[in-house]
Image 1 (tube, rainbow, N blue to C red):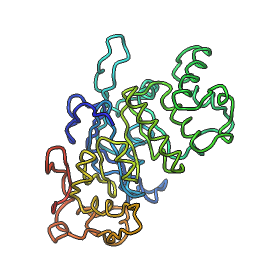
Image 2 (cartoon, rainbow, N blue to C red):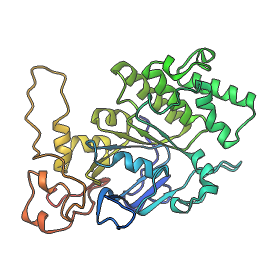
Image 3 (tube, rainbow, N blue to C red):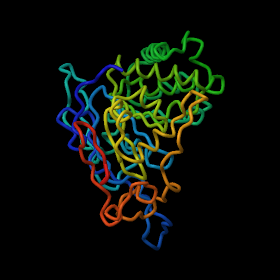
Image 4 (tube, rainbow, N blue to C red):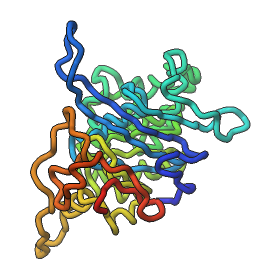
Length: 349
C-alpha cells in the first residue's frame, strides 16, 4: 500500500489525526431487569486508545469475541460508549478544503447525526444480511444519497452508475434493477462497498468484509478497497481475524484480546518482531502453504476467558505461558512504547 502521512502517537492522537480514541469503554449489563440494577457486566471494550491518520488503514485483529466489532460500532455511533472519548477531525467540505474542527462524538446529537453519517460509514461482514432483499440494487445504493439530500433523481442515477462502475459491476445498467438474490456473494459485497462510498466518506469501518467470500472473490474485494482508499483518501478501520489479510490491507495492526488492545505497531514491524505472547501465539497459528513444514503448537494455555467482570490483573494471565506472580498481583499492564511506534501491554515484554 502507499505510505500515508506520519501516523500519530498511539495515545494522544496527535494534532492531525482523523480519528482519536482515548480510554474507550463499553460494558453490557448481565441479567438486567426492571426492578433491579445489574451487578455484573460484560467488558466488551475496556480502556482502548488509538489514533488513525488521514489515508491510513489500521487493522484490528483478534479471535472472535474479543470486542473488535463493538469498537467499530462505537466509532460509527451504532452503539454509545460507557466511557471514554472519540474525536473526529474530518476534512472540511467547503471550498477552502483542509481539516475541520475536532468533533467530540459524545456531543453529536440526532440533529447532527446526518452530517456525521456522511463522513463515517460501515461495511458489514455479511453481504447476505446487510441488504434488504425487497429493494433493488439502485434503491440500496441511492438510499444514502436520498437521506443526505444529495442531488436530484437524475444526478443520483448518474452517481450510482458511476460508483457501480468503480466497484467493478459493469455494465452498470445490467445491475441497477436487480435484487440481491440475483447476485453472487462477491457482487453483493461490491454493492455493500458502493453503498458505503457513494456519499464520499472520509472514514470507513470495514468489519471482516471478505470473511464470507471465496478466495477468488476475496482477493478482488481487497484490491478494490485498496484502490478506492488511495483514490479517495479514505481511512479504514479494518476488522479481521486473519493476519494475512491485515498484512495486505493495513499500514498498522492493533492486536486485541478480551476487550483490550495488547499490542500496536506498523504492520511489518509487528509481524517481524511480536512482543506480546498473544501476538506470538496468533502468528504461530497462521498456516504455511508447504506440506513438508511442521510448526510447533501455539504456546498458549486454555480457552478464551469469559469477559464478565474480569479480575483487574492482566487479561491474558490465565493463558499466558510467561506469566509471573507480579502479573497476577498487579493491574492490567499499560500500553508502553518499547521501540518507536511499537506499543505493547505486557510486564514481561
